[in-house]
Image (cartoon, rainbow, N blue to C red; front, side):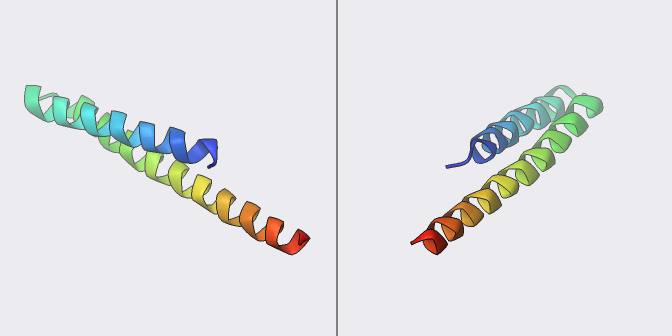
Length: 63
């Protein structure tokens, strides 16, 4: 499993917490920051998944 998948998932979780906390206390900036973190985490996770696919294909080609 690629490190980007793990870090992306963690970033999405962190963003979700920030977003929820921002909503709870009425802090629009914190809420927006959380949404940005969630989006960035999704992108990073997708990159990690793509790396895993490429790595698996490369291993299959070496056989």
